[in-house]
Length: 255
Image 1 (cartoon, rainbow, N blue to C red):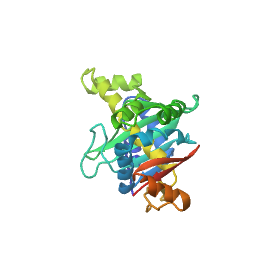
Image 2 (tube, rainbow, N blue to C red):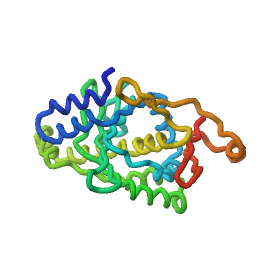
Image 3 (tube, rainbow, N blue to C red):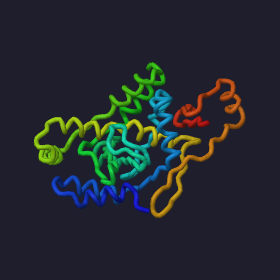
Image 4 (cartoon, helix red, strand yellow):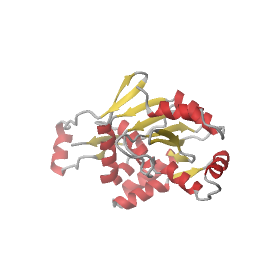
């Protein structure tokens, strides 16, 4: 089965213009590919939307990928690209080769059958994310909008010069195209970080290899046993949140 990653890679290899297209295509083609099923993607989205502080306060549990990773899920972009029943979104995540803990992220989507990647590139420093997560647990409010704003404040972006020149040609000199590219680059990052957290949390997502890719799905939720299960019942832990269960461990409390 052809995935969004396959389509984006093929389209980028055939794109004329900036050499970065070829670099992105090669990275996607050689990346570890996670294909997220719809129920898993919707559960991740629910956790982000309804338990944002729970996500923010545990983001220091995201490990640095060992190499290039590709994640795709069957939901429309948060920036308004694509859409419809067959919408898909994906993110290429690449550890910076020279800067420790720095991730470079390229977002892609399928819009009306045409696969595209963003011209902007997002940057996330997991070292800064770790500091922010600790501060969230100790000092910050749990108000959803404030928490999401703090997460987004840790995401930066840039547009490579060759992409900027290409966009100016395609948009007949529209200077606002760079602003749109920056939105495309950053809008999916909170979802992506929540997804990566869910993959590293107890009771989170499960992964099986299929056709050379990693099928990522949502297993049935299980009530925790023993004292932890009793505490959850007494405190009525809300489903969908990430509960800190150790210095470097969290459990995803799902319904």
